[in-house]
Amino acid sequence: MNYMKLSASVVLVSVLMLLGCSSNGQQAKKDGSWEVTIRGKVGFPQQGGTISIMEITKAGAGWQDTINLKSDYTFKKKINIKEPGYYKLNFYNRQAVDVILYKNDLEINVDGREASGFFEVKGSPEIEFIKEAQTTINGVQNTPEAQKLIADFNKAQSANDQKTVLAIQKDYQKLLTDAYNKVAEQIKQSPPSLGVINVLQSQMIDKDDYYDAYLVTAEKLRKEWPDVSHAKDFIDMVDKMKTLAIGQVAPEISLPDPDGKVVPLSSLRGQYVLVDFWAKWCGPCRRENPNIVRAYNEFKDKGFTVYGVSLDRTKADWLQGIQEDGLTWTHVSDLKYWQSEAAKTYNITAIPFSLLLDPNGVIIAKNLRGQALDDKLEEVFKGK
Image (cartoon, rainbow, N blue to C red):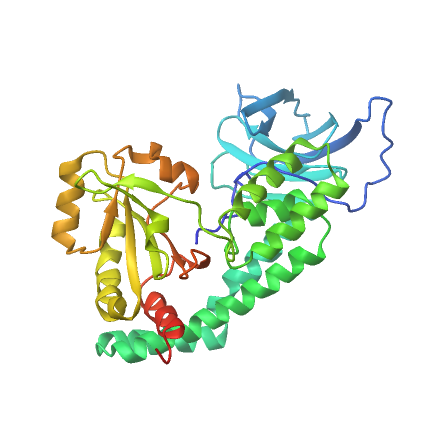
C-alpha cells in the first residue's frame, strides 16, 4: 500500500469534502460563501519571483491569484470560498505547499528556496487528521515489538528459514492490522472532512478490508453535504466500489479464449474461482504467477480453478506469457490492453488484481498474494 507523505505536498490524492470543526466565527455572505485568511512568513524570499495560490480541482487547476510579500517577509491573504477545497501555494517555483481550506484561518510558514525546504501549516484540523493517521500507521515500525520482529526476520532470512519468515510476516501484519483498525475506527467516528477523504482516497487503509469505513463516510456526506462537489465525487467512487465489494456476485465477463471461443466467467460456477487480471508485460504479475501455479496444482482437484484475464495487446505476447509461466487454467482476453471490456467493468487501474469467488460466484476475498492465497484456500477446503 502506498501512503501519501506529508512533505511539501500534504494532500492531493483526490479532491473531496470537508470538516465540521470550529469555523473561527466566519459569517456566510448572501451568496453562501465566506472568507478565510491565510498568513505566514517566508524565510528566504527570492528576488524576481512571485507567490501564487491555486485551487486544485478534479479537472486540474481552478481559481488562482498572487500573494504579496511584505517587507518583513510576511504575507496575508483573504480568500473567498463557497466549499472546502484543496489549494496549492507556490513560492517562486521553488517550493510548493498543498493545503486544505474550509472554515479555519491558516498559518503557513516556509523556507521558500527549495522543494524539500522547511514548511509548517498551523490551524488545519484536516491536515492534523491526516498526520495523526500517518503517525499511527507509519509509527508501527518503530515500536519495540516491530523492531524485534524485523531483527528476527533478517536472521531467519539469512538462514533461509522460510517457515520462520512466514510466521514473522504474519506477526508483523498483525501489528499493522491493529494500526489500520485504529485509523478505520477514527474515520468512522469523525465528521466528514477532506482530511478523512484524503486518508481513504490514498488507501492508507485498504479499501476492501475497510470498505465499511468508506461506506460510512459516503453516507455521512450524502446526508450532510449533498451539494458539495468533492463529496459527490467521493460518493460516486464508493457507489462504484459496491459492485465489487466482498459479498457481492462478481460481474459477468464474456471474452474469447486463445482458440476464439467465448468463455463466460459464470460457466465456472460450482467451483472456487480466482479471477486473475494479468499480462505478459506486467512484472509483478509474472512474479506472482508461480504462487498461483502452486495453489492451482494443490487445490484443483478439490474444486478450485483460475480464470485468467489478460490485458495484453497481442496474441503472441499473451500466449508466450501463458507458456513461459506454465499457466494451465482457463484464459480469456480481448487484447485491448487497459481498454479491455472486463477491465472497464471491474474498474481495473493496476495489475495484478484478483478476486476469489465462491461456487455461487460471490466475491469472498481480493488480491490474495503468495501464502495468503494458500491460507484462504486451506480455509475454504478444510475438511473437504
